[in-house]
Length: 613
Image 1 (cartoon, rainbow, N blue to C red):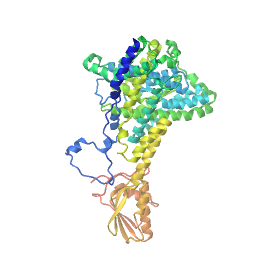
Image 2 (cartoon, helix red, strand yellow):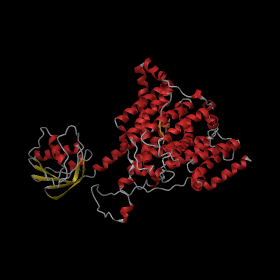
Image 3 (tube, rainbow, N blue to C red):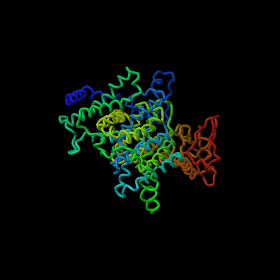
Image 4 (tube, rainbow, N blue to C red):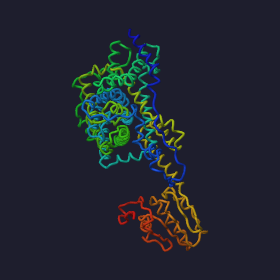
């Protein structure tokens, strides 16, 4: 009988596999304009095309593009009720279990350590974080960091590392360092979500392999039929059957499909005695023995004893790992915050400062109870949002409470949950998290952006998230600077006038200097900056330098249409602070542009930015 049921479940595969992994590609990047950056096309605001097409700044914004990463399409706003938040927390708590166990094993500690890290870190971070909907746990990126520490120095330093990493994150939040996440370009964001989706996919595929041989289970074997059948049934229930049922039965709409699907898989596998791996099989029966005795105790002494015994040696050991873990955790958490800002259409923006501080206190709480630390998880946060937990912090807090209560009082039931049913949920998350549109637009976006997407994805998979984001951001910044440095040029309507066009900054100074020919130019030349914006100190120095070249030949230079602060800063940076006789600035308040040059405001407090007439 049980194999009759399995064959029925497998028949669903032929119907659903083409739909489960079907996706709608969102709008790609617009085709880049190859004209000069300063060329402006005037269009009518009443044009129908303008009404439909958002500006490039919106198309390339992280928050706006985050909507394309959502598996469930547009998320309708729901009333912020305790019931929806708590049921969402229950759904996420189930999805957290295999991840926490796996990451604890990676770190080289007991699965219980990973589970209780999720309880304490998740509760504190949800209560104090930057926005509702974010769920935190021990993560793969952080576990890899502490795994090296555990292998080289033993597990006694893990709690201290988590506490120190939390303190660093709190300090970073207090000083507002989280705001620099805004500098992460959209191609880096795409590479981040793609790389993380691949990492998650690789982790889930291990549950479909034979533990003895390491090969994928055969579909013709009883274990393979049971495993694949439960996975397909779980995905189909979540994606199709339960949502359709909820449309007809209003009372069921507050129950997340994930809970129903996992409960169904657990009951079927236990009733039919299917040969599938359970949570107890991968974590051990000791993890799910239950009872109050498994609650970790506050262990301040255990954290401080190595520090008191040999302070300098202890700090020397844990500080490098703590810095890396705090950076990795903060980056992943802040990127998750940015994603949810775009996915949850509630008109609110999360606070990077609060999120960094909340993650810090969460890691401190986890470390003081013997945990290993962690950060926000993208996949589980997406499950939380889809399940109705985007409107209240109670969803993340209840996730921790339900997980803790389950470990204490419902351990046998939790132990019997098939791992493959939870892996099926994460496979859907992987499918939604991967930005499929990035594959379609690779030949339509600048080659640098395509390179950055692939670079960040590769480094995320091969190394760690912090290095990937740093490498991608640096590559994007250098590429942008190089492109802008080639955009400056000059036209000569007559023999004595240079009409400059393009940005003048550190990257374009060399080309700016090459535009002039002081020896062959007349005794008086005019540099017109109407279409040229001086951006930084290097640009000011380049102007003074070219004026000096003309001055050494007893020629005069007239500077027109500089910003008001630019005119004064040209004097301030000279020694003495006065322009030479051959460098003449012609001021016209009615026509001169108004903008601020990137200089140190504390040094030049007496140089105000001009105002329009």
